Length: 150
Length: 292
Image (tube, rainbow over all chains, first blue to last red; front, side, top):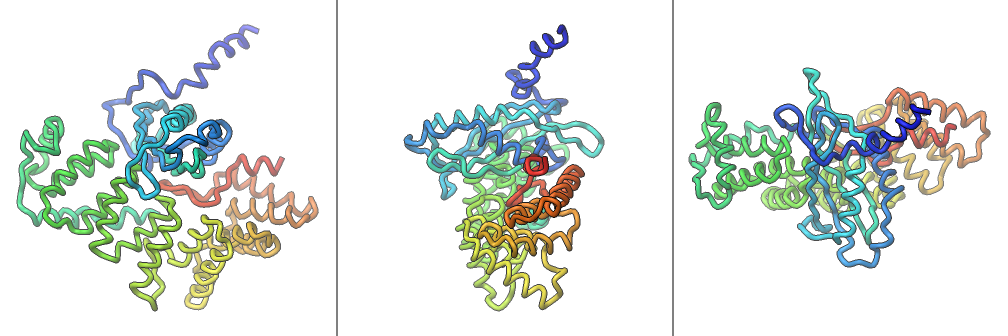
């Protein structure tokens, strides 16, 4: 029973430990690109896609203005798999900078921060390193129609 | 896919940029802030920081490590000192920005590069397909590139142009057109070198197009063909199973297929790439749903 109570107590910490408020990069803060050494996500793109399909509720924004475009969220993943330093960029379908409805952006950003299964990259010398990563969401009429890359 | 790295050798770029006079970043520069200049100067022990080529290298390296804002300010500073930027330079700026998800900068530079040299359209079409995921533009640019050499089968970034067109149509849901282009590529390559020279995923994608059209029997043939060339093609096993299931084949016939997909998937046999995700991916979760 004690163990069960302890698990219940610590479960929220385990689940949401990845997007930490006082995010810090490891070592001297040096950063590697997501593709070398390779940063991974447990279950790859399909796990990320299902996370959004399952949880992202697009209906409430459907009649809003500026509800289409390409949203890119750049962030960093440290050697512990924690994420932080999120930056949001938006372009229209002609790849010119634009603004997408704040409510949509905030919602997707929140869900992105909820991706908890990053597997940090390991350098050739065995060191677990920090990486920078981005996810792009193609949005049409508030709905995410494509997510890439991973 | 690794060809993206091979396109713009840095040394060639440095040669292009180094042909302009040396320059010194001033404390009151309109593009660089004082911290940028301190950062550039921190390289003075190992590099001649009065060389525009070296400053470009510092900016490009900064971008590589994810410092998008500063890296691009440094690159903008270099560009502001180059009277007529070579298309290779604009192309290289685009590549690194694209790999960081800076689509506006990547597109702008590639558009300028293609205006200077039509040859860029091959790469432009290729990245529109895989990176920008703009399938209409991918087709448009691939057509422009193909029109440069009408009697020659082009291969932007090493991939057959008809295979790429097939993929773009597949992503647009234009399955019959996709099949036409896949067939063009398959028959041309088979005639010239033999079927075993065809990129195996073409059979998978042709199978997908047939599957989407509801032609499960023909789709099955192509998934089997893909497997005959790649015995560990998990995705093909998965769609082979779905095709047979749609054909209402008996359980004892279809079960070994999904079990094989499970076995291969558990060993990590999935078609992946470090930069982008491939079209029509299959996950272990999808296989498990069918297999259990």
